Length: 213
Image 1 (cartoon, helix red, strand yellow):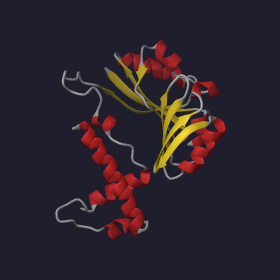
Image 2: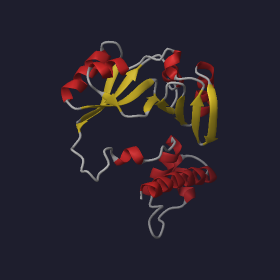
Image 3: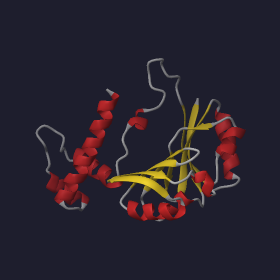
Image 4: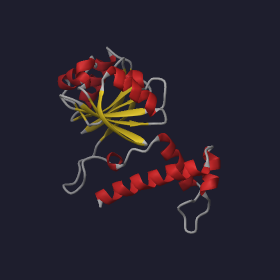
């Protein structure tokens, strides 16, 4: 089995919403509505755009935004990739991701030639870049099909930056080699803000780990 990740530029509502900022949208598609995760420092701007272009039925705000839309994106003129997938015997692994004005899709195929044909077909209609392409080994019966990355929680860009800085500076060592004040200074934010992002990142990672044990 082969896997490739493509960035496909488009003019859909979510491409436009993420075109000029660092916010990311992850989408699980249904026939009647969509489930979205909106992650980033400019999520309020993106939420406003989604309300105007697609409609929001319900959302839960807590750093990340979990949204149920009024209708499926397909009803709002979204350019579909299903026709390309069907034509070349490929399938996608949810969620679809939107960032930097592009739709990011993870595509699987049994034959590498199918991925190549999929790429050429899509590229004839859209601007496409390939993020990665690899062959997947045959999984053991008792092993997960997908990589551990698929099980990791979604951290906001700031949470990721603070957590990585804390790790690099030895915050998690015994004894600790840095303080939250030093982490905040390195990132360029206030100490309390850094502590908030660090606690949020720690909780998300801990919750994901416990669910996988």
